[in-house]
Image 1: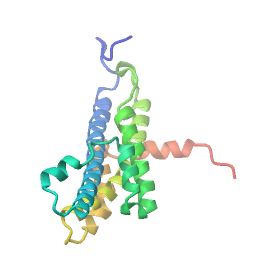
Image 2: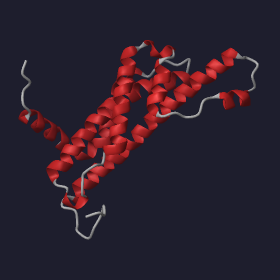
Image 3: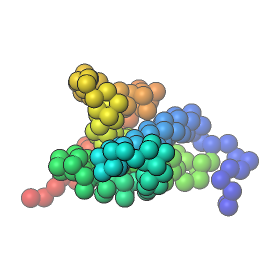
Image 4: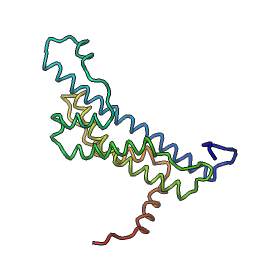
Length: 196
């Protein structure tokens, strides 16, 4: 069938709703991550422009800022700046970029909605959850940079930094209860052990 929806009712409407709810929240986080990366890069360029020409007028500085870039190019520019001294941060940011792409392009992918079955929906939710975990790592770093830009004289709220990944997981997937945890456990139990 060529249509995304038809006359048939989905086999698992509540589970699909739960997945789509999670996918929507994950997409919001992915978009926010990308926006924060662009913000940090624009602020970096703003500081460089004011240091290069301290008497330049604000409107000139703003018009000299580069236009928005794709996320990969934004991260490359940030990596080549003084922020790039922390290589491990950029490894996390690159994984977050890949997770953002998965969330944006495949996060809600279930195939034909009317034919989606419980195991496939839960497997997709587990893949989406893994992507959100990767996204949370990079988003946590960029959020700290944004905090430093906006509040340069304040210490980073360590409690928030430490709790952030669990907060995102609960916000995106909390409505599943323990269903995804049991799905992840059963997938680990049935996986083939690695051979050394």
